[in-house]
Image (cartoon, rainbow, N blue to C red; front, side):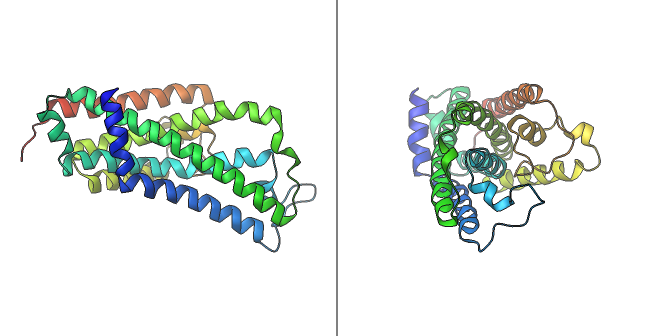
Length: 267
């Protein structure tokens, strides 16, 4: 708990925390605002709802906001995990902690536990802001908000949020492990993004293989569709994907912890 508390205080001061959260929230609000103030809400087939109105119509707006958050948030999760892990080496904070006698394993796992808490708080704030923005934009566009209190939808939101949080933690752990191995923020971010785009590209040719890889299982587990986890290809059943999300998450953290435990710290 001591490492978790100190890591949380450290993350609260990191620019990466505020920039990542502001980017996700700001882009969501920008999209919702653009839809709400557009002169028309798009064209849809007869009997279907225009795509713009769907983003502002409750209770469906809840799912669409979550889809955006977990899609684009997955890509930001990789960058954030890599940025924090890489900074531990480039800024020398890991070396200082070890010199104080901290367990390397506990420090690495405690640091990622703090990242998990920050991600949960950030997603909660983004969702609340997104719902408020959608509610306001619906009024501007003259769309009814009668479905905002739909109990059936609201009862499913905690489970959907949990799945999305785990998906982002998994891809964030991939970035975290890569940056730990590289001992560099820039290398971790660059390789993490290359991994993301490489998996996305390979999905067009090897969908039956790619569906087991980190971004694909995160997408399948969260139902994030074609957001930041990559385009929809062959996907796994959601429960099976959740199991693989846990496997990738634990595996990535083990790689980071084992590397930290065996790494030679110089300088």
